[in-house]
Image (cartoon, rainbow, N blue to C red; front, side, top):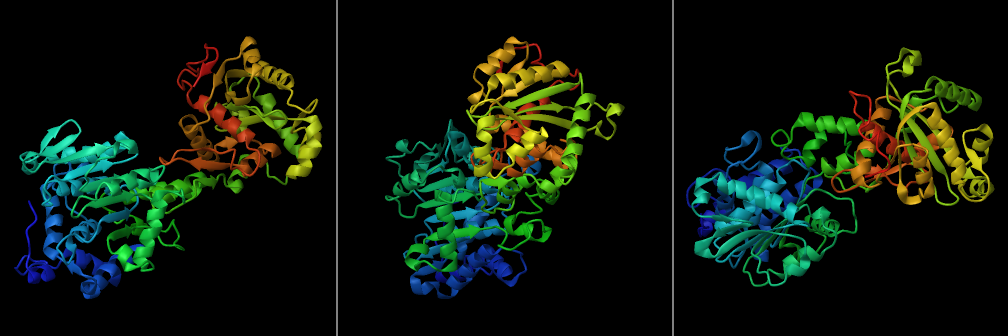
Length: 597
């Protein structure tokens, strides 16, 4: 499998001296540029770059070796898929993957060494990034003609690094040709005759000194917290003749990250706005929808998903995008992960026109809204519910909600199959005037109308709040009351002493993702009824959500425009309601005291 030298004529034809089919790299580039293959602007630029360099690259000392490109591409035929619907089948590179692999190994300098030293590939999830990295790493280990090749899969964590390494392990196990040449031990694939190895490498940059890297596979660069890992990898290649750092990732959201820096440099390299001396050794392939594209238009999805119809299933992609169209909080995550768009980490959340359908219209006279809410609470007497408490700092808004799961009780009429929310809000009396002026929010009007309670003094009166919670608990079957411990203080112990079941509910992604997503789903599916409470409506209009790299979401108080206490309280309560025993109608925590999550 070692690379073979090729004559000048062979290199130009890419046929090893015999007449052969056209070079798949150039064929792909021509198909993209001609429009035969639908691709985004950056992919077209990458293909135009290849075709232009075929014509004029020799002036800069660049040589196209078609035989070397085909050798690398054909290597993947020795690999086997290890999982999924193609388990056991030969690995057949898609056209875009042939273009990437062939470009990396086909382009050389006039001294015969490889042109590209860094590869930056950005493509949406499910397009086979990890298996492409794993296969290319195995090629570097066994077929690149490099004595003592040290190959690494590098990532922010050992588990992440093992994704690519583990895929390579399974490829070796599934291929008799590779098994005969590669020795497998724990976290190590070795080619003993050439003293070469392939290992996973975690993000502890302090342990990267002394490395001598021939090839590094860097997965999901957008998750890197800083540039240190990649910097260490680059400085560890100095003793090699033709090292390659192969970065592959989905788009991120941190525009100050090393991933964003490499994205922007890649764009400049493709556009030709940086000197050739800097960009000639940098390969870039960025598959994303174009600026101005309608992200819901099925025709543009292939731009970010060049494996659409193969590893990317159209039905699954359509389902996720259809859901995101209806759920604003999901849009940034879906557009980033499935359409490879750089998005903001924080997104505005609820579509307020949809929220309005869960209650009386905003223009309804407040007296009618108040009357309807009071009547509804009367119908809910004695019913199962879950409480959510979001207490404020000393002089801010506090919220308590009760979430009532559907009962299918006909006495509730059209609300029998709804999740019903009732709520209470408090704010210190002496602070209202200042807050009205500062926030331009009608706290005083809501107080006068009875939608908000002003507690005596200039600080939150927790005793007042405690008394009202106990009064509500006496009227309903309150199974659990969940709270954020940050400002809970003594009120938690007091409520516990009165016999309430309290559950500390975490405010991180782990705890908040499920109820946040469920609240949005309930709103979008018109399965939520809040009655049109004006303070809660205001909270809902303020909410922004934060996404983590895995696409989890939670309400973000810091970056929301204004108070969101009522929505956070709903998420707290809904989180516990979702955990209840649906069949028995009782929570497994019902008989416990304070529970820490």
